[in-house]
Image (cartoon, rainbow, N blue to C red; front, side, top):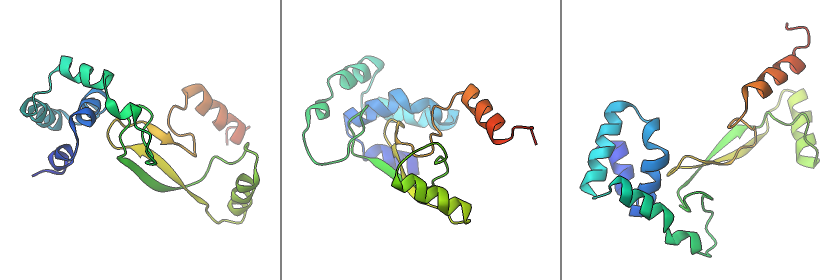
Length: 147
Protein backbone atom coordinates (compact mmCIF):
# COMPACT_ATOMS: atom_id res chain seq x y z
CA UNK A 1 0.00 0.00 0.00
CA UNK A 2 1.42 3.38 -0.99
CA UNK A 3 1.91 6.18 1.54
CA UNK A 4 -0.82 8.26 -0.08
CA UNK A 5 -3.32 5.39 -0.01
CA UNK A 6 -2.42 4.67 3.62
CA UNK A 7 -3.00 8.34 4.49
CA UNK A 8 -6.35 8.37 2.65
CA UNK A 9 -7.59 5.34 4.60
CA UNK A 10 -7.04 7.30 7.84
CA UNK A 11 -9.43 10.07 6.73
CA UNK A 12 -13.16 10.13 7.41
CA UNK A 13 -15.55 11.13 4.60
CA UNK A 14 -15.57 14.81 5.59
CA UNK A 15 -11.78 15.01 5.67
CA UNK A 16 -11.52 13.07 2.41
CA UNK A 17 -13.95 15.49 0.75
CA UNK A 18 -11.83 18.46 1.83
CA UNK A 19 -8.68 16.67 0.70
CA UNK A 20 -10.23 16.05 -2.73
CA UNK A 21 -11.36 19.66 -3.09
CA UNK A 22 -8.25 21.45 -1.88
CA UNK A 23 -5.23 19.14 -2.25
CA UNK A 24 -5.96 16.73 -5.10
CA UNK A 25 -4.48 18.97 -7.79
CA UNK A 26 -1.22 19.41 -5.87
CA UNK A 27 -0.25 15.81 -6.68
CA UNK A 28 1.29 14.45 -9.88
CA UNK A 29 -1.10 13.11 -12.53
CA UNK A 30 -0.44 9.44 -11.76
CA UNK A 31 -1.05 9.94 -8.05
CA UNK A 32 -4.15 12.02 -8.85
CA UNK A 33 -5.62 9.11 -10.78
CA UNK A 34 -4.91 6.76 -7.84
CA UNK A 35 -6.63 9.20 -5.49
CA UNK A 36 -9.62 9.51 -7.85
CA UNK A 37 -9.92 5.70 -7.93
CA UNK A 38 -9.94 5.66 -4.14
CA UNK A 39 -12.60 8.40 -4.09
CA UNK A 40 -14.72 6.24 -6.42
CA UNK A 41 -14.26 3.24 -4.09
CA UNK A 42 -15.57 5.38 -1.23
CA UNK A 43 -18.49 6.58 -3.45
CA UNK A 44 -17.45 10.24 -3.29
CA UNK A 45 -18.68 12.12 -6.35
CA UNK A 46 -18.28 15.85 -7.00
CA UNK A 47 -21.76 16.61 -5.67
CA UNK A 48 -21.27 14.43 -2.60
CA UNK A 49 -17.92 16.11 -1.93
CA UNK A 50 -19.53 19.57 -2.04
CA UNK A 51 -22.37 18.36 0.17
CA UNK A 52 -20.00 16.89 2.77
CA UNK A 53 -17.95 20.08 2.89
CA UNK A 54 -21.00 22.28 3.36
CA UNK A 55 -22.50 20.15 6.14
CA UNK A 56 -19.33 19.26 8.02
CA UNK A 57 -20.45 18.50 11.62
CA UNK A 58 -16.93 19.06 12.94
CA UNK A 59 -17.50 22.79 12.50
CA UNK A 60 -19.76 22.68 15.55
CA UNK A 61 -17.36 20.79 17.81
CA UNK A 62 -16.20 22.56 20.95
CA UNK A 63 -13.31 20.37 22.05
CA UNK A 64 -9.78 21.27 23.12
CA UNK A 65 -8.12 19.98 19.95
CA UNK A 66 -6.29 22.31 17.61
CA UNK A 67 -8.40 22.29 14.42
CA UNK A 68 -7.99 23.63 10.92
CA UNK A 69 -10.13 26.74 10.36
CA UNK A 70 -11.13 25.59 6.86
CA UNK A 71 -11.88 21.85 7.14
CA UNK A 72 -12.01 21.44 10.95
CA UNK A 73 -9.67 18.46 10.88
CA UNK A 74 -7.31 17.84 13.78
CA UNK A 75 -4.64 16.38 11.49
CA UNK A 76 -2.22 19.30 11.79
CA UNK A 77 1.44 18.98 10.80
CA UNK A 78 3.86 20.96 12.95
CA UNK A 79 7.34 21.64 11.65
CA UNK A 80 10.17 23.43 13.39
CA UNK A 81 11.46 26.15 11.07
CA UNK A 82 14.12 28.80 11.43
CA UNK A 83 12.47 32.10 12.20
CA UNK A 84 13.69 34.62 9.66
CA UNK A 85 10.91 37.22 9.42
CA UNK A 86 11.67 39.20 12.59
CA UNK A 87 13.07 42.48 11.25
CA UNK A 88 9.99 44.72 11.40
CA UNK A 89 8.11 42.99 14.21
CA UNK A 90 7.90 44.20 17.77
CA UNK A 91 7.83 42.22 20.96
CA UNK A 92 10.20 40.51 23.32
CA UNK A 93 10.50 37.23 21.39
CA UNK A 94 11.05 39.11 18.09
CA UNK A 95 13.85 41.17 19.60
CA UNK A 96 15.55 38.07 20.99
CA UNK A 97 15.29 36.35 17.60
CA UNK A 98 16.76 39.43 15.89
CA UNK A 99 19.65 39.56 18.34
CA UNK A 100 20.23 35.82 17.94
CA UNK A 101 20.39 36.36 14.18
CA UNK A 102 23.04 39.02 14.58
CA UNK A 103 25.19 36.63 16.61
CA UNK A 104 24.75 33.79 14.12
CA UNK A 105 22.36 31.69 16.17
CA UNK A 106 19.02 30.55 14.84
CA UNK A 107 15.66 30.78 16.57
CA UNK A 108 13.22 28.01 15.73
CA UNK A 109 9.43 28.30 15.83
CA UNK A 110 6.55 26.04 14.82
CA UNK A 111 4.98 26.22 11.39
CA UNK A 112 1.50 24.60 11.29
CA UNK A 113 -0.05 23.22 8.12
CA UNK A 114 -3.27 21.20 7.79
CA UNK A 115 -2.49 17.77 6.35
CA UNK A 116 -6.02 17.45 4.97
CA UNK A 117 -6.70 20.68 3.07
CA UNK A 118 -3.21 22.19 2.99
CA UNK A 119 -4.00 25.57 4.57
CA UNK A 120 -1.16 27.23 6.47
CA UNK A 121 -2.50 27.79 9.98
CA UNK A 122 0.63 29.32 11.44
CA UNK A 123 3.23 30.89 9.16
CA UNK A 124 5.86 32.66 11.28
CA UNK A 125 8.01 33.62 8.27
CA UNK A 126 5.10 34.80 6.15
CA UNK A 127 6.14 32.46 3.33
CA UNK A 128 2.67 31.54 2.11
CA UNK A 129 0.71 34.19 0.34
CA UNK A 130 3.61 36.55 -0.25
CA UNK A 131 2.88 38.60 -3.33
CA UNK A 132 5.45 39.15 -6.07
CA UNK A 133 5.44 42.88 -5.26
CA UNK A 134 6.22 42.16 -1.61
CA UNK A 135 9.07 39.88 -2.68
CA UNK A 136 10.49 42.59 -4.97
CA UNK A 137 10.11 45.22 -2.22
CA UNK A 138 11.92 43.00 0.30
CA UNK A 139 14.73 42.39 -2.18
CA UNK A 140 15.14 46.09 -2.92
CA UNK A 141 15.09 47.13 0.74
CA UNK A 142 17.52 44.35 1.71
CA UNK A 143 19.81 45.17 -1.23
CA UNK A 144 19.40 48.91 -1.93
CA UNK A 145 22.10 48.97 -4.59
CA UNK A 146 21.06 45.62 -6.07
CA UNK A 147 24.28 43.99 -4.90
